[in-house]
Image (cartoon, rainbow over all chains, first blue to last red; front, side):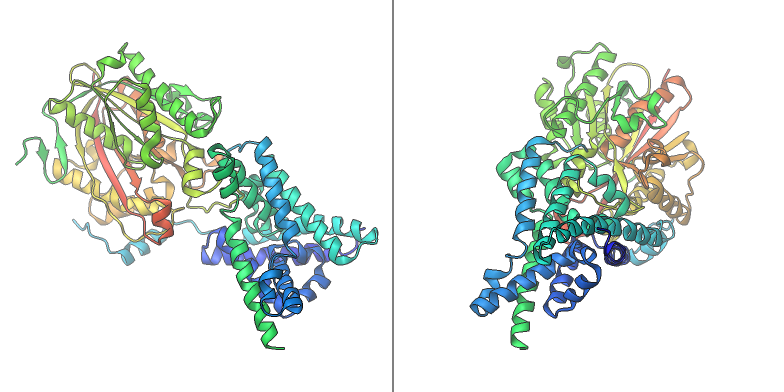
Length: 118
Length: 147
Length: 337
């Protein structure tokens, strides 16, 4: 049950630390940093590099937003395998649809019951 | 009396009085908080792996649960306090993505459920999905070309 | 030469309008700050039982204006005009508050300098013989400003050390041709000054040049020096902007002394976690209508110069990569008996 906990902590922590460093050095707003992070994940996913990080860090690699980018690329590649180059459009969101759908649903349900506290 | 200051000269004067960001402290806190959130994810992942679930499915389900967790903490008004303190440590994990969707949904519900909640929930997450998808499509095509 | 004008940018009033009363209301965070005893009303929360923060802000402004009237047992129909503004798009707080009052309304926008602008304009109308009694008011609310300018209030966003906390507060003044008590002596209207600062979480740096420009012009127009005043109070330059202002004034040969302070620094303590300090229309409104007014009545302050400082950006201008223009208006108030 405690397998890989240390590596998850380290890999996840380092990814977040790097993002923080970039944020503090460039003075970019957090939204821009999130965009850069997902794009980085997408690029690393294309060349199999991200798979190595996942083997190494487990959740430390699948939980940060880079993993979202990786999943988008994996989906696009799967789509290409099935349908040729146009399959990239068909497949890109398929691996991330669980996460996005949960977020949409939860956002709506929570807005029903909760108010912002300020 | 010297009253006219040029932009460059002014920035030079102003810099003397602008407090520097505590970069080292921020990095350490981000590392700790980000690492901690990922560890929670690892515990959840391990639970599913022990049940015999294949890695891909277990990982997908874990992400879904973490999104739900981030969403709930946002609804309870806790995630923003974490964010003020942790910066990227709470914005980069997928819980931060959930926070970026739930917080505008809560905020703009006063403007109605269609154009408040419905439209605004993507105000911060939208660019992530747009640029992630475009990058992914281009990278996927490139990997096709290079094969 | 216009007979009520001094120098380039200053209104002088031959017949100085009186401040019959001032009322100040603040939110819970400000009510836990060092100036709590000087405010008339300390609100228990940000929402005041309303459906939205915008509605709560209107309630706060309306109550503050009514309180200022009550202090002099005045009725709404005795007031000639309401000159007011706030931070929200289309100044909805001031406009919707005016909807509840039967007072002809002049809505104005000066960002966080609005209170000074409204006092200056109210004084002009009265000293110029256009009105007998005017209410000058302005307010801001932390949550309405956050959701309009920055982002959802539940978003986990890290704040930078130069950022400021928008004050939840309102101030209202009843200015009159006849009366007794503190008087408005003169007012200097500022130019828009922009020295290329683009960071919206560093407004003190963006506004300091405008404050310096207006102050220097004020002293040039009136022939006064900084030590003429017991207190020179800027609106919301906070720690960063006020230090820059002192440097700019020093470099210009008109240094500011111990009698200089800033509302954004006075309204919160460092322990309240507000980074550089407070900001917003409500900052200088509440501090002037609460702290300064009470000190004037007590005779502890006799001559005060308030300088409202405003950052004239919008989320659109910032996203279009424009820099932040600043403006500052100075109003001189002298104590009465």
